[in-house]
Length: 199
Image 1 (cartoon, rainbow, N blue to C red):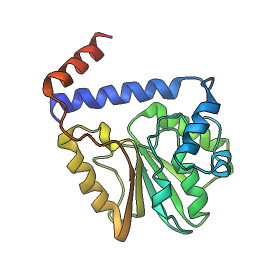
Image 2: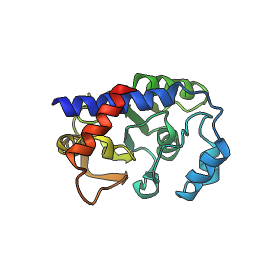
Image 3: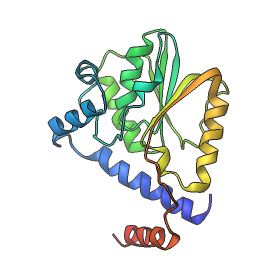
Image 4: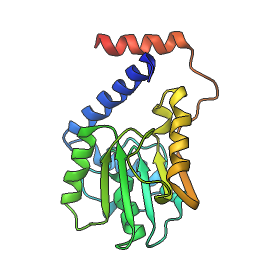
């Protein structure tokens, strides 16, 4: 990992770790309305533990995942478990929903959220999404909600190689993300890094 990639990764971890440590006194009604505008059904939102939806998604990868009972699904950048818990309900007790995140604080919050429910077919792994400690051909579906865009440009191919390695033959990738039409200039990226380290 080069210096720019290391700085970017640390900025992402710092930001999302701070979000994970916040209390739940945010505007939960607004967060719920945003999720509903992305197509999450009110009954699905009601089924997840309080504190799992931090309002940081940018779409709905579950809408295109077409999960079926008994499948294994991996959520890249799973945060507090928002999509993991909903996926667990869709794959039912014989399936498995795995969340992968590189923030220890996010995974701690996801584990706390898991302890609030009777959902037992979830698992959380501390790992970057570019090198996940799981066996090859492990998943029927891999999904990600507004996370891959946070990777430095040179690490995106590593992530997609991992997706290819982890998917079973005929497996699916369900993404909801932000796409830049052109690369952000290096000078602007340097300013952002400088401002981050100054704060």
